[in-house]
Length: 56
Image (cartoon, rainbow, N blue to C red; front, side):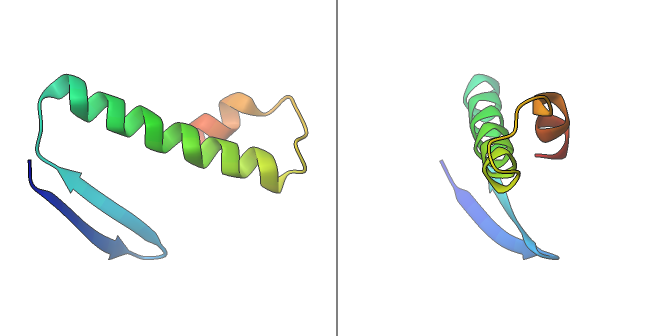
């Protein structure tokens, strides 16, 4: 499996060639990590989980 990473603006973009299931798992894990970072930044205040996932 070949991985490529490049920077787009202030964000890293990772291109992964894999099966659809693996690709979906990678995407969901990346979004979950980013959503948690937003949750941390907000001081662990609850109630914005959907916004964090949509922004992530």
